[in-house]
Length: 457
View 1 (tube, rainbow, N blue to C red):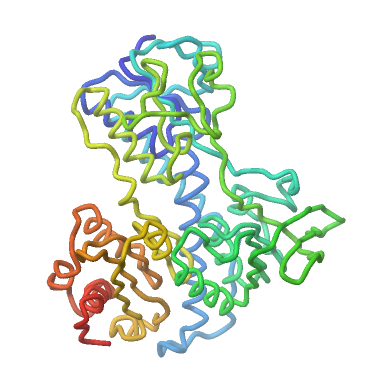
View 2 (cartoon, rainbow, N blue to C red; view 1 turned 30 degrees about the horizontal axis):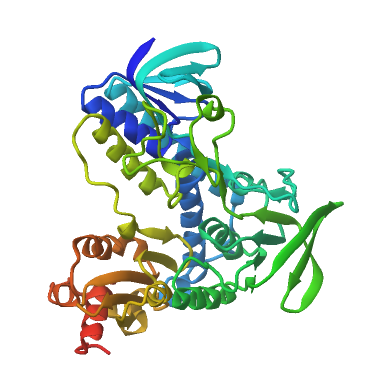
């Protein structure tokens, strides 16, 4: 079978590439060894958000009296029903992807794809040919020798999505997006959670003010956060896990029912024929140019297997850019300086562009505007006053970065992301009328604060 374009992997990068190629009139085959939609849709972003929504509903029910609502009887979390709903949500989205593939006349080829020569792909013993092959094989949870995953006591995010019962205690190793979201979910349901972070602060990729705010938020959830702490070894002893750590208090051993390893992801580049074809790999990622071409003509790579943020929306953007370049449309390269990032904890975290520390490292003089949600009428009415908006501008008042913590701030991130991409100024943002009362007013207020004429501060 011959195609114009073959895509290997059907995650957010892979299916976006396949659909865009089909829209441009190409004959497309999409290879997938598991479920359509990849990890993100089936075992990552989507089912995780479904669980977090359930936890949020549970938390609201427990706090119902604060809103003048009287509930009778005990409010209890039903983990099995939460998991069942999460799986149903993932299945619905999976069917949606399959519908889109069928609608666009894309052949979904089941199996493991391996390059055998330029333009040639083997899928479980069947050969396929294409003028262009796009690798979008994604990533998997990184496993550390000190934490041998057994899937029961020492688990990854995959198992954390489908636990059969709530443990009494859990240790989460890593405080990035994955670790923080699961820690928040289980702590909200009453599990005694301890988060261990190797670096000096929680959510180390975020702005320092965000990290400090989230450490306080986790303390409100009665979760323990240990920063500047190294996990030396994890072992299972009976029905418990023993975790040897080295931290601010020296060496000690913690115990928990379950240990969740959330120490990042590892690119799926093994066994797909890269070595045989001489495709260049650097630091565990496929080396590509700005249009995702490898050093081997006709072979491309996008998503988690190339350098850059391992985020679903980044993979989708790279997919469209790659395919449009193949088809001669001369697209603008992906602007990695304007890539939004979201963490769906309570409160949520949303950011784009430079942090204050990164601006200082680059020697950029900045003007900063802040707006706390304690001053927001909408946040106060909603009973969600934790968090803030922080906008970072250069001396010409152009937006360099935005960092938000609060209820629903991930839905507010589009405006500062567009502002960052278009080079909008503090004056432009402050001069844009924002609806009242909304959380989104905080962006306007922060811009006004940077200009020195905030009204509500």
